[in-house]
Length: 122
Image (cartoon, rainbow, N blue to C red; front, side):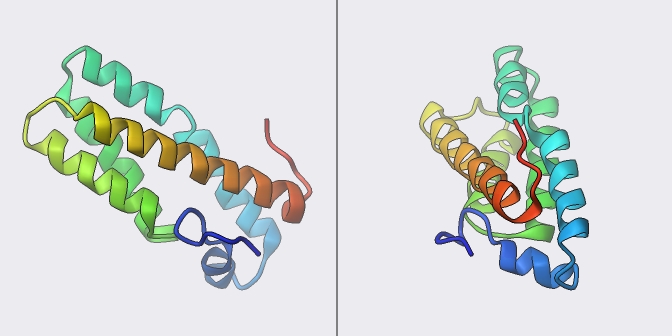
């Protein structure tokens, strides 16, 4: 279905919901609605020096991604969370790599939904 399961693995999600595309769409809609602005929120928390908010945002995303499709986004988020937990500012390099991975994952979700759930998202 999708060529890069490390980015987004719909087969694993479909197995969790018994191949119910309606339920899968609901899960993906909720995921998008909850996390779509996470990179901007992480960046804002970092700029404000709010390490607790940075940690909270990364932990929430990591936990959700781990439960529905572990892979590259989970690994990148885990690295950032570990760095945030150390009390240090996030590495710009790691932050940029994570943002690229995040965007790639979200694009894959949108593409999958447009093809398989008949509900393209903007």
